[in-house]
Amino acid sequence: MNLRVPVKVVVVGFGMVGSRLVDELLRREPEAFDVTVLGSEPYEPYNRVLLSDVVAGRTDVAAITMPLPDGARVTVRRGVSAVSVDRASRVVTADDGASHPYDHLVLATGAAARIPPIPGLRGADGGLPAGVHALRTLDDAREIVAATVNAPRAVVVGGGVLGLEAAVGLAGRGLNVTLVHHTGSLMERQLDPEAADVVRAGLEAQGVTVLPDRLSSEVLVAGGRAVGVRVRRRTGAGPDDPGAEPHEEVVAARLVVFSIGTVPETGLAAAAGLSTDRGVVVGHDLTSPDDPRVHAIGDCAQPPGGSRGLVAEGWDQARRLAEKLVSLVEPVVEPAAVVLGRSAGPHLRVPRDDAQPSMAVRLGALLTSGATTRAQSERGIDTRGTDVVKVKGGPLSVTTMGVCGPVRPDGGAQRAVRLADPRAGRYVEVVVADGVLVGATCVGDPRVAADLTAAYTRRTPVPQDPAFLLLTPVMAAAAPASSPEHMPDDAVVCRCNGVTKGDIGSACAAGAHTVEDVTRETRATTGCGSCKDAVCGLVDWLRAPERSVPEPA
Image (cartoon, rainbow, N blue to C red; front, side, top):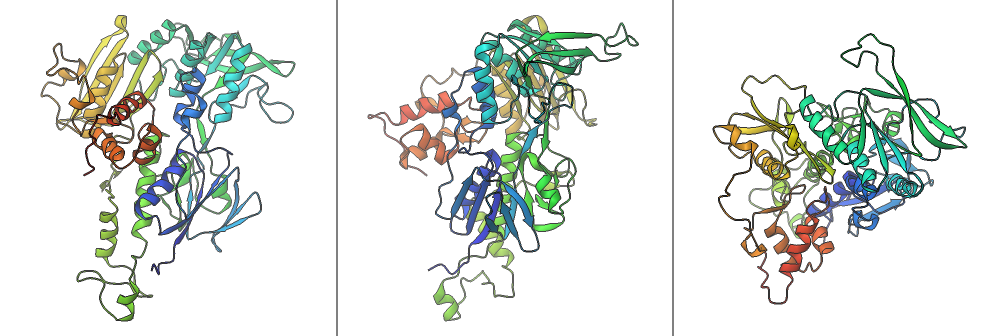
């Protein structure tokens, strides 16, 4: 008999981060929480990272659906938005009129696509004209795919990660694509100019016309439909004409995609009297400084040091917040122990109504849940591995992590070594400090990028001469595994979620028969999606009739 009263948790937002938080809670304490989720979109949770793959035609819409939370104490309200929060009464009111009381409120409202205030971009009803889209939601992706049928030319505004992926994807569908970017370097936050030049050459090799140092000044509309974009060169952008007048030109297109960043959804928090800046202000513990019962994670949150807007970072926040909420839950007390006055154990203090759980109880709750907390220092939480950026651009391979790009923190002990081979479409830079890799940029060499990612996330010692990291060995020390049988159990198959071959084998031994079952149990394939083929092959191998599946540890 469980005498514990479940803690009421309301999660506003059912995207990749909000749904991950629910899953993290269920994996730790499925009976400790009554969870209500309000999701403004009418769909099941889906992998937003793979929307550019949908646009490119590499992935079907059905393939990006993520598993629904499976718990008797979880209520998901899809197509329902939160409209107000009464912090005094601890109640969230939804747009369908329903009220949802909470003990803890988690804001995972995400961010909206940034749309610039330029002429022609807003119609009389405030909406975008036909043919103009952002790429932020599943509906956006579907509309862009539909528009490609009758649009031979497309303009993508914004040369960041998503802009590059959209441009390559549309070019792969046969469209004549022009990429407009406001600075001289693509992906200027992650790439230095030399690396950006290599990326630009790779785009142009795939048929994408790149217009750097251009600003979109107007969307040309005829009959309610976009027909082109007027762009102008930034004043002083060219080295030969620093004082010249801005040059304007018109790029014809019936499809215009804006990918110029996002704006965190802070309206609900601000209306509730919570501190907001660029995002919802929270501390290292992801809790609002104004209310210890309100938390924010994902793209809407602004922790100390800011946010990079990467899904791995949001997932890490979901895990840490789940650990925090679990640590606040009182442990289950057997009725007999209470009635007879017996101690629940030789080292644990049973909390009375007027007492908090002992430190041993709190630590025990974390340890038995399998939680692992990242260390916190004066610089905040160690989030190594959550800042790996990977462009899914078909033949175009771009990966960055840690210390990279033109603006870098002061680090006298850092040593940077680079290989620039623009004629071969390759650029690799590694940054090492204290014997480990602290940053890397890799363009045009996915094998080296995979090795660098593993070294960075695992903090493995690097060679004394870091130049050895720039190239794959001429002769490998061992031949690649020709069969899953030769893979060690600790070989990482899904880097986004840290899933190993052994994890997948254990899931199959416990009854997972399909890739969907394995995904539900291990979360493999729910990140960037690049491991899906490997997971499918491994599951097929493990489930072969003659295969003896190892017992789970």
